[in-house]
Length: 66
Image (cartoon, rainbow, N blue to C red; front, top):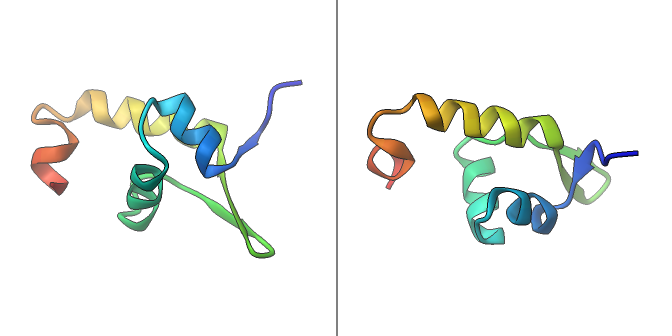
C-alpha cells in the first residue's frame, strides 16, 4: 500500500527539494500538512496538488515568493 502521509524528508524526496524548502512551503501555505501529536505530516496528494499549481504559475514559485 502506498503511503498517504509523508514526513517532511519523504515529501522533500518526492518533490526533489530540501527538507527546509518543504517547511517553507508549509509556512507559506503552499503545501498542506497535518499535525499528529508533535509530528507534522504531508498528505501525498498535497505534493501532487503543489506541482499542479506550480505548473500553472507562468513566472514560477521563486518570483512570486522569493
